[in-house]
Length: 70
Image 1: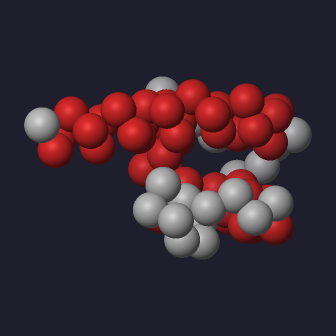
Image 2: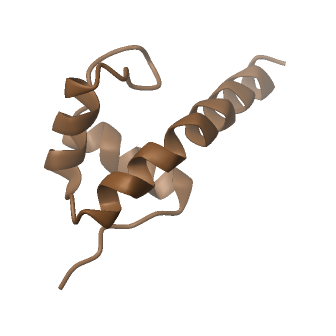
């Protein structure tokens, strides 16, 4: 039961944040810039804390998104 609740909460969080993340990725933001932008916008991480490069990397992987490299 607890695991299903966690998965449901994570899915809702990802769905809510996906448009913001996709917009920032379209500007060419990397993981550090994404973390900084989300923190500046006062958008907490999944666990209610500040975003870090690590949390952004995990979030991108979970969302199936990636950083475009030139």
